[in-house]
Length: 427
Ligand SMILES: NC(=O)c1ccc[n+]([C@@H]2O[C@H](COP(=O)([O-])OP(=O)(O)OC[C@H]3O[C@@H](n4cnc5c(N)ncnc54)[C@H](O)[C@@H]3O)[C@@H](O)[C@H]2O)c1
Ligand SMILES: [Zn+2]
Image (cartoon, rainbow, N blue to C red; front, side, top):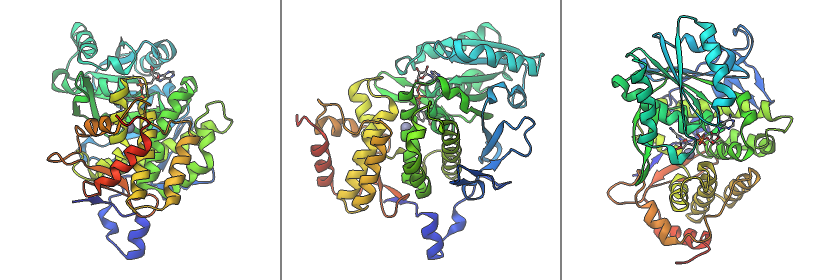
Protein backbone atom coordinates (compact mmCIF):
# COMPACT_ATOMS: atom_id res chain seq x y z
CA UNK A 1 0.00 0.00 0.00
CA UNK A 2 1.23 3.43 -0.87
CA UNK A 3 0.95 6.33 1.53
CA UNK A 4 0.14 9.39 -0.46
CA UNK A 5 -0.61 12.95 0.42
CA UNK A 6 -2.30 15.09 -2.13
CA UNK A 7 -1.24 18.68 -2.32
CA UNK A 8 -3.57 21.11 -0.55
CA UNK A 9 -4.27 22.79 -3.87
CA UNK A 10 -5.38 19.47 -5.38
CA UNK A 11 -7.66 18.84 -2.44
CA UNK A 12 -9.22 22.24 -2.70
CA UNK A 13 -9.92 21.90 -6.40
CA UNK A 14 -11.43 18.48 -5.87
CA UNK A 15 -13.35 19.66 -2.82
CA UNK A 16 -11.36 17.00 -0.95
CA UNK A 17 -10.86 16.35 2.75
CA UNK A 18 -9.05 19.55 3.65
CA UNK A 19 -9.99 19.07 7.28
CA UNK A 20 -7.82 15.96 7.55
CA UNK A 21 -4.75 18.18 7.54
CA UNK A 22 -4.31 19.73 10.93
CA UNK A 23 -2.70 23.14 10.85
CA UNK A 24 -0.15 23.14 13.65
CA UNK A 25 0.42 26.84 13.62
CA UNK A 26 -1.58 29.98 13.94
CA UNK A 27 -1.05 33.28 12.26
CA UNK A 28 -0.96 36.67 13.82
CA UNK A 29 0.22 39.00 11.15
CA UNK A 30 0.82 39.24 7.46
CA UNK A 31 4.42 40.23 7.35
CA UNK A 32 5.90 39.51 3.95
CA UNK A 33 9.32 37.91 3.69
CA UNK A 34 11.41 38.71 0.67
CA UNK A 35 8.27 39.35 -1.30
CA UNK A 36 7.71 35.62 -1.49
CA UNK A 37 6.71 34.16 1.88
CA UNK A 38 3.61 35.38 3.61
CA UNK A 39 2.82 34.46 7.21
CA UNK A 40 -0.83 33.86 6.45
CA UNK A 41 -0.05 31.36 3.70
CA UNK A 42 2.70 29.53 5.45
CA UNK A 43 1.12 29.31 8.87
CA UNK A 44 3.88 30.80 10.98
CA UNK A 45 3.47 33.30 13.75
CA UNK A 46 5.17 36.60 13.22
CA UNK A 47 6.32 38.13 16.44
CA UNK A 48 7.72 41.45 15.32
CA UNK A 49 4.96 43.37 17.02
CA UNK A 50 5.31 41.67 20.38
CA UNK A 51 8.98 40.82 20.90
CA UNK A 52 10.60 43.18 23.32
CA UNK A 53 13.70 43.82 21.20
CA UNK A 54 12.21 42.93 17.84
CA UNK A 55 14.65 40.08 17.41
CA UNK A 56 12.29 37.11 17.39
CA UNK A 57 11.09 37.44 13.83
CA UNK A 58 9.00 34.32 13.84
CA UNK A 59 7.69 31.56 16.01
CA UNK A 60 6.58 28.19 14.71
CA UNK A 61 4.64 26.03 17.16
CA UNK A 62 5.03 22.28 17.07
CA UNK A 63 1.62 21.00 18.06
CA UNK A 64 1.98 17.74 20.00
CA UNK A 65 -0.58 18.09 22.77
CA UNK A 66 1.11 18.29 26.16
CA UNK A 67 4.51 17.94 24.46
CA UNK A 68 4.02 20.98 22.22
CA UNK A 69 6.84 23.49 21.99
CA UNK A 70 7.81 26.70 20.23
CA UNK A 71 10.59 27.24 17.71
CA UNK A 72 11.85 30.82 18.00
CA UNK A 73 13.57 32.11 14.85
CA UNK A 74 15.47 35.37 14.55
CA UNK A 75 18.78 37.19 14.57
CA UNK A 76 21.00 37.29 17.65
CA UNK A 77 18.55 35.23 19.70
CA UNK A 78 21.46 33.60 21.49
CA UNK A 79 21.58 36.80 23.55
CA UNK A 80 17.92 36.40 24.61
CA UNK A 81 18.47 34.65 27.94
CA UNK A 82 14.85 35.37 28.88
CA UNK A 83 13.57 33.17 26.03
CA UNK A 84 15.62 30.27 27.34
CA UNK A 85 15.07 30.72 31.06
CA UNK A 86 11.32 30.70 30.69
CA UNK A 87 11.69 27.09 29.50
CA UNK A 88 14.13 26.09 32.27
CA UNK A 89 12.21 24.50 35.14
CA UNK A 90 14.77 23.54 37.78
CA UNK A 91 17.95 25.26 38.91
CA UNK A 92 20.54 23.15 37.08
CA UNK A 93 21.55 23.66 33.45
CA UNK A 94 24.05 21.59 31.48
CA UNK A 95 25.09 23.01 28.10
CA UNK A 96 26.33 20.26 25.78
CA UNK A 97 28.50 21.39 22.87
CA UNK A 98 31.64 20.40 20.99
CA UNK A 99 35.24 21.52 20.68
CA UNK A 100 34.56 23.54 17.48
CA UNK A 101 31.51 25.45 18.68
CA UNK A 102 32.57 25.98 22.29
CA UNK A 103 35.22 28.65 21.55
CA UNK A 104 32.72 30.63 19.46
CA UNK A 105 29.43 30.52 21.40
CA UNK A 106 29.72 28.73 24.75
CA UNK A 107 30.87 31.62 26.88
CA UNK A 108 28.22 33.92 25.42
CA UNK A 109 25.37 31.44 25.93
CA UNK A 110 26.48 30.65 29.48
CA UNK A 111 26.65 34.35 30.32
CA UNK A 112 23.24 35.28 28.96
CA UNK A 113 21.49 32.42 30.78
CA UNK A 114 23.30 33.28 33.99
CA UNK A 115 22.51 36.98 33.69
CA UNK A 116 18.89 36.27 32.92
CA UNK A 117 18.55 34.17 36.07
CA UNK A 118 21.47 34.44 38.53
CA UNK A 119 19.98 31.68 40.69
CA UNK A 120 20.75 29.04 38.02
CA UNK A 121 23.79 26.74 38.16
CA UNK A 122 25.03 26.76 34.54
CA UNK A 123 27.59 24.07 33.65
CA UNK A 124 28.92 22.69 30.37
CA UNK A 125 30.43 19.61 28.80
CA UNK A 126 32.45 19.67 25.56
CA UNK A 127 32.35 16.61 23.30
CA UNK A 128 34.60 15.67 20.39
CA UNK A 129 33.47 17.01 17.02
CA UNK A 130 32.26 14.77 14.21
CA UNK A 131 29.78 12.12 13.12
CA UNK A 132 32.36 9.45 14.03
CA UNK A 133 32.02 10.55 17.66
CA UNK A 134 28.24 10.22 17.73
CA UNK A 135 28.70 7.18 19.95
CA UNK A 136 27.59 5.78 23.29
CA UNK A 137 31.16 6.28 24.58
CA UNK A 138 31.05 10.02 23.88
CA UNK A 139 27.51 10.21 25.25
CA UNK A 140 28.76 8.83 28.60
CA UNK A 141 30.64 12.12 29.08
CA UNK A 142 27.30 13.92 29.34
CA UNK A 143 25.94 11.49 31.92
CA UNK A 144 29.28 11.44 33.78
CA UNK A 145 29.23 15.23 34.07
CA UNK A 146 25.61 15.31 35.20
CA UNK A 147 26.30 12.62 37.81
CA UNK A 148 29.48 14.31 39.09
CA UNK A 149 27.52 17.55 39.48
CA UNK A 150 24.69 15.66 41.22
CA UNK A 151 22.12 16.96 38.77
CA UNK A 152 18.55 16.12 39.69
CA UNK A 153 15.41 15.22 37.74
CA UNK A 154 14.53 18.87 37.16
CA UNK A 155 17.79 19.57 35.34
CA UNK A 156 17.79 21.02 31.81
CA UNK A 157 20.23 19.92 29.11
CA UNK A 158 20.88 22.52 26.41
CA UNK A 159 22.20 21.34 23.02
CA UNK A 160 24.45 23.99 21.47
CA UNK A 161 25.55 22.79 18.03
CA UNK A 162 24.62 20.96 14.86
CA UNK A 163 22.63 17.80 14.36
CA UNK A 164 25.20 15.57 16.02
CA UNK A 165 25.13 17.53 19.28
CA UNK A 166 21.33 17.93 19.12
CA UNK A 167 20.69 14.22 18.60
CA UNK A 168 23.15 13.23 21.34
CA UNK A 169 21.95 15.77 23.89
CA UNK A 170 18.32 14.84 23.31
CA UNK A 171 19.06 11.19 23.84
CA UNK A 172 21.17 11.96 26.92
CA UNK A 173 18.25 13.98 28.33
CA UNK A 174 15.71 11.27 27.52
CA UNK A 175 17.59 8.69 29.58
CA UNK A 176 19.19 10.69 32.42
CA UNK A 177 17.11 9.87 35.50
CA UNK A 178 14.48 8.60 33.03
CA UNK A 179 14.10 11.99 31.43
CA UNK A 180 15.15 15.57 32.19
CA UNK A 181 14.27 18.79 30.36
CA UNK A 182 15.96 19.57 27.08
CA UNK A 183 16.40 22.69 24.90
CA UNK A 184 17.84 22.92 21.39
CA UNK A 185 20.05 25.80 20.22
CA UNK A 186 20.91 24.60 16.67
CA UNK A 187 23.88 26.20 14.93
CA UNK A 188 23.86 24.53 11.47
CA UNK A 189 21.29 24.86 8.69
CA UNK A 190 20.77 21.10 8.91
CA UNK A 191 19.93 21.33 12.60
CA UNK A 192 17.78 24.46 12.21
CA UNK A 193 15.57 23.10 9.43
CA UNK A 194 15.54 19.43 10.29
CA UNK A 195 17.23 17.68 13.19
CA UNK A 196 16.17 20.04 16.01
CA UNK A 197 12.49 19.66 15.08
CA UNK A 198 10.50 16.49 15.62
CA UNK A 199 12.09 14.74 18.56
CA UNK A 200 14.25 12.06 16.94
CA UNK A 201 17.34 11.68 19.11
CA UNK A 202 20.12 9.12 19.30
CA UNK A 203 23.61 7.92 18.49
CA UNK A 204 25.19 5.63 15.91
CA UNK A 205 25.99 1.96 16.44
CA UNK A 206 29.08 0.53 14.68
CA UNK A 207 26.67 -1.50 12.53
CA UNK A 208 24.21 1.27 11.70
CA UNK A 209 23.56 5.01 11.79
CA UNK A 210 21.14 6.38 14.42
CA UNK A 211 20.29 2.86 15.56
CA UNK A 212 20.25 3.63 19.29
CA UNK A 213 17.85 6.39 20.27
CA UNK A 214 14.48 7.65 21.41
CA UNK A 215 11.68 10.00 20.45
CA UNK A 216 12.07 12.88 22.89
CA UNK A 217 10.75 16.40 22.41
CA UNK A 218 12.52 19.55 23.61
CA UNK A 219 10.99 22.36 25.68
CA UNK A 220 11.82 24.85 22.94
CA UNK A 221 14.12 25.41 19.97
CA UNK A 222 16.02 28.69 19.68
CA UNK A 223 17.24 29.40 16.14
CA UNK A 224 19.72 32.28 15.93
CA UNK A 225 20.36 32.70 12.22
CA UNK A 226 23.44 34.86 12.90
CA UNK A 227 25.30 31.78 14.17
CA UNK A 228 25.38 30.60 10.55
CA UNK A 229 27.91 33.32 9.77
CA UNK A 230 30.66 31.10 11.21
CA UNK A 231 29.44 27.93 9.46
CA UNK A 232 31.51 26.80 6.44
CA UNK A 233 29.58 27.14 3.15
CA UNK A 234 29.94 23.42 2.50
CA UNK A 235 27.94 22.73 5.70
CA UNK A 236 25.37 25.37 4.72
CA UNK A 237 24.82 23.72 1.34
CA UNK A 238 24.45 20.37 3.06
CA UNK A 239 21.52 21.74 5.08
CA UNK A 240 19.98 23.32 1.99
CA UNK A 241 19.46 19.82 0.54
CA UNK A 242 16.79 19.25 3.20
CA UNK A 243 15.08 22.53 2.25
CA UNK A 244 14.93 21.38 -1.38
CA UNK A 245 13.42 18.14 -0.07
CA UNK A 246 10.63 20.07 1.72
CA UNK A 247 9.79 21.85 -1.52
CA UNK A 248 9.64 18.56 -3.41
CA UNK A 249 7.51 16.63 -0.94
CA UNK A 250 5.21 19.36 0.34
CA UNK A 251 5.37 22.82 -1.09
CA UNK A 252 5.71 23.74 -4.76
CA UNK A 253 5.82 27.46 -3.86
CA UNK A 254 8.86 26.86 -1.68
CA UNK A 255 10.51 24.94 -4.52
CA UNK A 256 9.86 27.79 -6.98
CA UNK A 257 11.14 30.30 -4.43
CA UNK A 258 14.32 28.23 -4.08
CA UNK A 259 14.77 28.30 -7.84
CA UNK A 260 14.80 32.09 -7.64
CA UNK A 261 16.94 32.45 -4.53
CA UNK A 262 19.25 29.45 -4.28
CA UNK A 263 22.54 31.31 -4.83
CA UNK A 264 21.86 33.62 -1.88
CA UNK A 265 21.19 30.62 0.37
CA UNK A 266 24.40 28.69 -0.13
CA UNK A 267 26.89 31.55 0.31
CA UNK A 268 26.93 33.23 3.70
CA UNK A 269 28.77 36.24 2.20
CA UNK A 270 25.92 36.91 -0.25
CA UNK A 271 24.22 40.23 0.63
CA UNK A 272 20.80 38.53 0.72
CA UNK A 273 21.97 35.53 2.76
CA UNK A 274 20.48 36.59 6.11
CA UNK A 275 17.06 37.40 4.75
CA UNK A 276 16.90 34.39 2.44
CA UNK A 277 18.08 31.83 4.97
CA UNK A 278 15.69 33.13 7.65
CA UNK A 279 12.75 32.76 5.26
CA UNK A 280 13.82 29.28 4.26
CA UNK A 281 14.35 28.18 7.88
CA UNK A 282 10.98 29.50 8.91
CA UNK A 283 9.13 27.75 6.10
CA UNK A 284 11.05 24.50 6.57
CA UNK A 285 10.31 24.41 10.31
CA UNK A 286 6.63 25.04 9.61
CA UNK A 287 6.52 22.13 7.15
CA UNK A 288 8.36 19.77 9.46
CA UNK A 289 6.16 20.84 12.38
CA UNK A 290 3.07 20.11 10.30
CA UNK A 291 4.30 16.67 9.25
CA UNK A 292 5.40 15.74 12.79
CA UNK A 293 2.14 16.98 14.31
CA UNK A 294 0.26 14.63 11.99
CA UNK A 295 2.57 11.64 12.44
CA UNK A 296 4.97 11.96 15.39
CA UNK A 297 6.25 8.36 15.43
CA UNK A 298 6.51 7.82 11.65
CA UNK A 299 3.58 5.51 11.09
CA UNK A 300 2.71 7.20 7.79
CA UNK A 301 3.46 10.56 6.21
CA UNK A 302 6.53 11.32 8.35
CA UNK A 303 8.30 8.87 6.03
CA UNK A 304 7.98 11.53 3.28
CA UNK A 305 10.82 13.35 5.05
CA UNK A 306 13.01 10.50 3.84
CA UNK A 307 12.83 11.50 0.17
CA UNK A 308 16.28 10.76 -1.28
CA UNK A 309 17.42 9.26 2.03
CA UNK A 310 17.35 5.57 1.07
CA UNK A 311 19.81 6.23 -1.76
CA UNK A 312 21.61 8.85 0.36
CA UNK A 313 22.11 6.62 3.41
CA UNK A 314 23.56 3.96 1.10
CA UNK A 315 26.07 6.54 -0.18
CA UNK A 316 26.92 7.66 3.37
CA UNK A 317 27.41 4.14 4.67
CA UNK A 318 29.42 3.07 1.62
CA UNK A 319 31.78 6.05 1.74
CA UNK A 320 32.21 6.12 5.53
CA UNK A 321 31.17 8.88 7.91
CA UNK A 322 32.44 12.29 6.88
CA UNK A 323 33.38 11.66 3.24
CA UNK A 324 30.03 12.86 1.97
CA UNK A 325 28.29 15.18 4.45
CA UNK A 326 24.75 13.98 5.19
CA UNK A 327 23.18 16.66 2.98
CA UNK A 328 25.64 15.94 0.18
CA UNK A 329 24.57 12.30 0.16
CA UNK A 330 20.98 13.55 0.09
CA UNK A 331 21.86 15.62 -3.00
CA UNK A 332 22.77 12.35 -4.72
CA UNK A 333 19.65 10.70 -3.30
CA UNK A 334 17.29 13.45 -4.51
CA UNK A 335 18.81 13.17 -7.98
CA UNK A 336 18.30 9.39 -8.10
CA UNK A 337 14.79 9.56 -6.59
CA UNK A 338 13.73 12.21 -9.14
CA UNK A 339 15.18 10.15 -11.98
CA UNK A 340 13.38 6.98 -10.82
CA UNK A 341 10.10 8.88 -10.38
CA UNK A 342 10.39 10.13 -13.95
CA UNK A 343 11.31 6.71 -15.38
CA UNK A 344 8.23 5.27 -13.68
CA UNK A 345 6.17 7.90 -15.46
CA UNK A 346 5.12 9.47 -12.17
CA UNK A 347 6.53 12.97 -12.77
CA UNK A 348 7.33 14.99 -15.85
CA UNK A 349 10.80 15.34 -17.28
CA UNK A 350 10.57 19.02 -16.35
CA UNK A 351 10.22 18.21 -12.62
CA UNK A 352 13.14 15.77 -12.79
CA UNK A 353 15.37 18.27 -14.62
CA UNK A 354 14.48 21.14 -12.29
CA UNK A 355 15.23 18.99 -9.24
CA UNK A 356 18.66 18.01 -10.52
CA UNK A 357 19.41 21.59 -11.61
CA UNK A 358 18.56 22.92 -8.15
CA UNK A 359 20.75 20.32 -6.45
CA UNK A 360 23.64 21.29 -8.75
CA UNK A 361 23.13 25.02 -8.20
CA UNK A 362 23.33 24.34 -4.44
CA UNK A 363 26.85 23.03 -5.06
CA UNK A 364 25.77 19.59 -3.90
CA UNK A 365 26.97 16.40 -5.59
CA UNK A 366 24.59 14.46 -7.86
CA UNK A 367 26.67 11.32 -8.40
CA UNK A 368 27.60 8.49 -6.01
CA UNK A 369 31.23 7.57 -5.25
CA UNK A 370 33.00 6.35 -8.41
CA UNK A 371 33.67 2.87 -7.06
CA UNK A 372 30.09 2.26 -5.85
CA UNK A 373 28.21 -0.42 -7.82
CA UNK A 374 24.47 -1.15 -8.26
CA UNK A 375 24.97 -4.21 -6.02
CA UNK A 376 26.45 -2.00 -3.30
CA UNK A 377 23.32 0.13 -3.47
CA UNK A 378 20.96 -2.85 -3.35
CA UNK A 379 22.77 -4.40 -0.41
CA UNK A 380 22.84 -1.17 1.60
CA UNK A 381 19.28 -0.15 0.73
CA UNK A 382 18.02 -3.56 1.89
CA UNK A 383 18.61 -2.57 5.54
CA UNK A 384 16.60 0.66 5.34
CA UNK A 385 14.25 1.20 8.30
CA UNK A 386 11.28 1.86 5.97
CA UNK A 387 11.40 -1.61 4.40
CA UNK A 388 8.57 -3.94 5.36
CA UNK A 389 8.94 -7.76 5.23
CA UNK A 390 12.06 -7.50 3.10
CA UNK A 391 10.36 -5.27 0.51
CA UNK A 392 12.25 -2.15 -0.47
CA UNK A 393 10.07 0.92 0.19
CA UNK A 394 10.98 4.25 -1.31
CA UNK A 395 9.72 7.80 -1.12
CA UNK A 396 9.15 8.93 -4.69
CA UNK A 397 7.73 11.99 -6.39
CA UNK A 398 4.33 11.46 -7.92
CA UNK A 399 2.03 13.93 -9.66
CA UNK A 400 2.35 17.70 -9.36
CA UNK A 401 5.41 19.40 -7.93
CA UNK A 402 5.19 19.19 -4.13
CA UNK A 403 3.56 15.77 -3.96
CA UNK A 404 5.08 12.38 -3.15
CA UNK A 405 4.32 8.80 -2.10
CA UNK A 406 6.02 6.15 0.01
CA UNK A 407 5.63 2.78 -1.62
CA UNK A 408 7.15 -0.60 -2.45
CA UNK A 409 4.85 -0.89 -5.46
CA UNK A 410 7.10 0.16 -8.33
CA UNK A 411 8.78 -1.59 -11.26
CA UNK A 412 12.07 -2.95 -9.95
CA UNK A 413 13.53 -2.94 -13.46
CA UNK A 414 13.32 0.86 -13.48
CA UNK A 415 15.26 0.97 -10.22
CA UNK A 416 17.98 -1.12 -11.86
CA UNK A 417 18.00 1.31 -14.80
CA UNK A 418 18.59 4.18 -12.38
CA UNK A 419 21.38 2.36 -10.55
CA UNK A 420 23.05 1.35 -13.81
CA UNK A 421 22.85 4.91 -15.11
CA UNK A 422 24.22 6.64 -12.02
CA UNK A 423 26.93 4.16 -10.99
CA UNK A 424 30.22 4.53 -12.84
CA UNK A 425 31.31 1.03 -11.75
CA UNK A 426 29.21 -1.99 -12.65
CA UNK A 427 30.76 -4.41 -10.11
N1 LIG B 1 17.06 14.01 14.50
C1 LIG B 1 16.73 14.20 13.25
O1 LIG B 1 15.55 14.23 12.87
C2 LIG B 1 17.82 14.42 12.25
C3 LIG B 1 17.53 14.96 10.99
C4 LIG B 1 18.60 15.24 10.12
C5 LIG B 1 19.90 14.97 10.51
N2 LIG B 1 20.14 14.42 11.73
C6 LIG B 1 21.50 14.14 12.18
O2 LIG B 1 22.22 15.35 12.18
C7 LIG B 1 23.59 15.07 11.97
C8 LIG B 1 24.13 16.03 10.93
O3 LIG B 1 23.96 17.34 11.43
P1 LIG B 1 24.85 18.55 10.91
O4 LIG B 1 24.82 18.54 9.44
O5 LIG B 1 24.41 19.72 11.66
O6 LIG B 1 26.34 18.10 11.31
P2 LIG B 1 27.27 18.40 12.59
O7 LIG B 1 26.49 18.46 13.82
O8 LIG B 1 28.38 17.42 12.52
O9 LIG B 1 27.85 19.86 12.27
C9 LIG B 1 28.61 20.07 11.12
C10 LIG B 1 29.97 20.71 11.45
O10 LIG B 1 29.79 22.10 11.64
C11 LIG B 1 30.35 22.51 12.90
N3 LIG B 1 29.52 23.62 13.35
C12 LIG B 1 28.26 23.56 13.82
N4 LIG B 1 27.75 24.79 13.96
C13 LIG B 1 28.74 25.65 13.61
C14 LIG B 1 28.80 27.06 13.52
N5 LIG B 1 27.74 27.84 13.78
N6 LIG B 1 29.97 27.62 13.13
C15 LIG B 1 31.03 26.85 12.79
N7 LIG B 1 31.02 25.50 12.81
C16 LIG B 1 29.87 24.91 13.22
C17 LIG B 1 30.27 21.26 13.74
O11 LIG B 1 31.19 21.32 14.81
C18 LIG B 1 30.63 20.19 12.70
O12 LIG B 1 32.02 20.14 12.53
C19 LIG B 1 23.69 13.63 11.56
O13 LIG B 1 24.18 12.88 12.65
C20 LIG B 1 22.26 13.24 11.25
O14 LIG B 1 21.99 11.88 11.53
C21 LIG B 1 19.14 14.15 12.60
ZN1 LIG C 1 18.36 14.16 6.19
